Every structure is written in structure tokens, then in C-alpha cells.
Image (tube, rainbow, N blue to C red; front, side, top):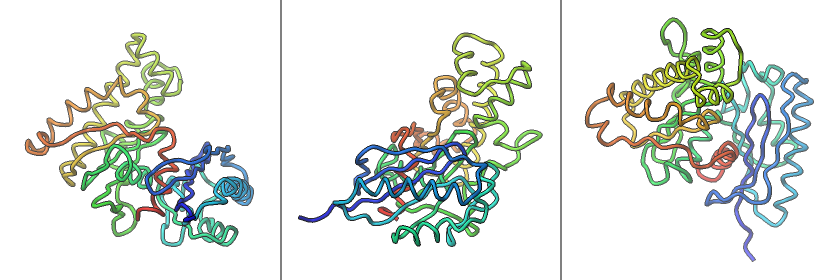
Length: 295
């Protein structure tokens, strides 16, 4: 009997690391696994925990043909050498030989990619962007990520920095200080002198808190500007937005969808569609698996 082709997807964040088994149709097999990143532990400890997690995951695919391991990780990265570069929330893994270590220990091919690129690749081939020729994606979480998938391929740019819009100038600062989970927390603290996580500020807004509502309006305006810049430059077929802050989309989605169209070419506005990501909490590792199965 022919073995099923699958890949292991890994999603490395500053808080947690997730793994899952994915087949060529984007289906998830067995139960995904998650561990705490423990980002301030020595790099060797984090890697030992990751390898242990991967070995456990591999026990669930003993009867399958594992094509490799795709790893999505917050950037910046050196994707060719498989290195995490200067990443603030993974300080002990900076310049750690991630790809080389995992390949040596598990004897499987490994691809390392920016987490936003991986997630939007997954959405482009199996999720909200399936069937579209060009998909512009935004990931709204602790920070903001952006990626372009064209004809099923990630557009990485000359220095692997395509989509790194977080550092783009906005008002007196940078975009990420206005469009991210951290930005929501920062703005509420600035306006109300109270510090809460973004999901709590969303609940305050739903309950009529005027300061919280103001924060989400500022967030929506900044996101609309970011969408207009990128759409005017790239002219994609559709836009996909995902990430943890998507859970608060009821507070900003309609305003963003209306506002950004005022700043893009009319023909683009008439043909552009804005979609929420479809792959849910598994989007990170599903997209990482697509690096092996679809690139």
C-alpha cells in the first residue's frame, strides 16, 4: 500500500512552539502538539525541547512518507542558511543554526521561513486565498506581518525582507506601534493610563468603553493606510488577514474595508476582496508544512 505524503509543520513564536502533521491537501492528522517556548532559556535548552517535540510528533506518522519539516518563525531570518537573526523575543536563538541542527538530528530536509510568509502561503494554497493567482496577506498578532504569494510562490525580495512593513514610518513612529496587539495595549495605556492586553481592551470596547473604542478606531485607520500602500504597489487579486487580533475583527473590519478603498485606484477597489483567514489556530504550522509540500 502506498504511503501518504505528509510534512511536519512547526510554528515558533516567542510564547509557544506548535507542531502538526499535514498532507498534500492541507488536512491535519493526529493531534497538534504545543510547548512553551521559554524564550529566555539558553538556546540549547529551547532546541532540545523542540527536538523532543518533533520526535514525539514523528511517532504519529510512522506509516506515512514524511517529506520534510517546515519551520515558520518570526523574523528577520536568513532563510538560505536557516538562521534566526536579531529577533527580540527569541534572544537566545539569535544566529543559532536551526536548520542545520534539526536536519542533523532527525535526518529530514528542513525549510525555515518567516512565519508571516508561511502562514499566508498556507492560506493561499489551502485557505481563504485558494484559487487566486496573487494573495496579499497580513498577520495581526503581537506584531504585524505581511506577505505576498504570487502564482503559489512566496515573494521574498532581494534580501529576504519583502513584507517587513512593520518598521515603515507612520505618524511620529512606525506602523507596528499602531497596528498590532502590542499597539492596542500601548495606545490604551497612553489614553487611559491603564495597561491591558488587546483581547481585554476588545471586551471593554464591546461594553462601550469610549477610550477602548477610540483605540480600535486608531488601529483601523492605521491598518487601512497600510493596506492602501501595499495594494497600490502590488495590485493583488485578494487580501487575506489573519492572526490572533482577528478575533477582535468586529471592532475594526468594516471600517478598514471601507476606508482603505478610498486610497486605492478605483479599478482595484472594484475588484479587490478582503477575506479573513480560514485555517484558524493551526494556520502557523499548516503554512509551515506547505513550505515542504507546495514550494
